[in-house]
Length: 137
Image 1 (cartoon, helix red, strand yellow):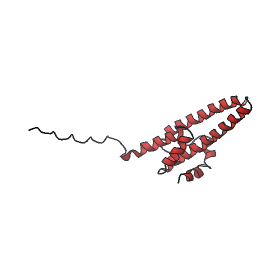
Image 2 (image 1 turned 90 degrees about the horizontal axis):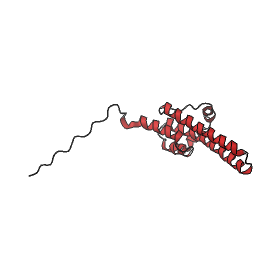
Image 3 (image 1 turned 60 degrees about the horizontal axis):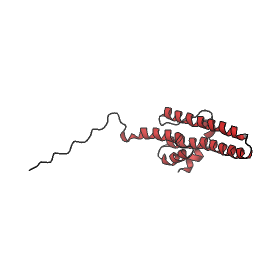
C-alpha cells in the first residue's frame, strides 16, 4: 500500500507587508496617473481611482496639465501645416511637454501616494481639478 504525503503547510505571510497592499497600490496609481500615456493614462486612473481621493486628485491634475499641453501641441501642429516656421516651436513644445511629464513622474515617485504639488502649473490647474474629479463620480 502506498501512502500519500500530506500537503505542505501554507506559506507564511511576508513580514512588513501592509494589509491588503493599499499603500503600494495608491503609490503605483499615482505614478501611473502621471506617467502612463498622458493624458489618456490620467483619464484611466481618474476613473480607476474612484475609491481614493488622493489618486483621483492626482489623476485629475494630470488630466488638466497634460490636456492643456496636448491642446497647445495640436494648435502648433495645425499652424506648422500652414506655416513651416512653427515646426521649430512644435519641436520646442514637444521638449517642454516631455519635461512636464518627467517632473510629474518624479514628483509622483516622491509623493508616495499622497497629493502631488506640481510647481507653478499645479496652482493654475487647482481651480479645474474639482470639475474634472466630478466627471468620475
